[in-house]
Image (cartoon, rainbow, N blue to C red; front, side, top):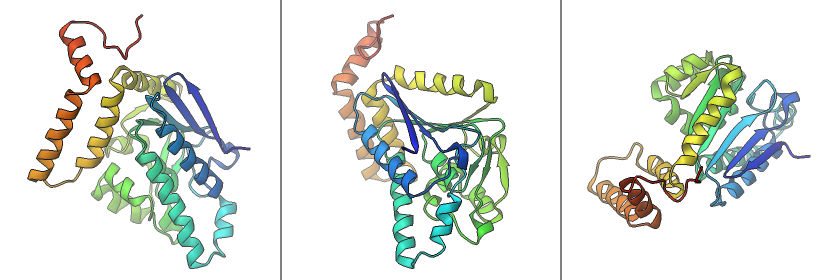
Length: 261
């Protein structure tokens, strides 16, 4: 039985962690399935958005307890391979060409915070709670750290990595980690609103915008960067989609990628 529930409706895919009995905690099977799912979905050029969520009350509680018991007897080599699999899964989601909208309805702990951090847009209910709890177990948030630090900033990470404090969705939004906070009842409507915005935009442009942010974030303002960004805009202006979008705007009509109503 799959640990994921993957739904497709037109240009939108929805990927749900489907282990509500263990609060959608990770194990090696979940990690492998997420890696495979996002690799496959990312290769589908018809997709315009992916929603990532979890069934049940929790988004993701981090590592599965049974998995942690097994890891207690792992050798260094086994731990290294296990951590690499998690790192590769996070990269598969982060680097997926299709924009990913995270839907956090409840608890988001440890590795779950990492999974939230690799989403492009993050929407949380006002009852969601976040915790980088690794230090409480004598561990550290190693593989998730590059994404979490980027998402919440170094200063916030300095605090929450070492204190392992819980923090609310409102606090996560104040840090810039979460984009939107709403009531639990309004969560799906807010996610759908963001998905609709994504679907309205040029498919190739949306993917290019996602890649642009990832590539230029934190880069020094060098001549090479100026040349690279100029090349990118020239490429997309000269593309069929770019020409169509500009002509549609100038002629006050819908672009070809939008369905007629």
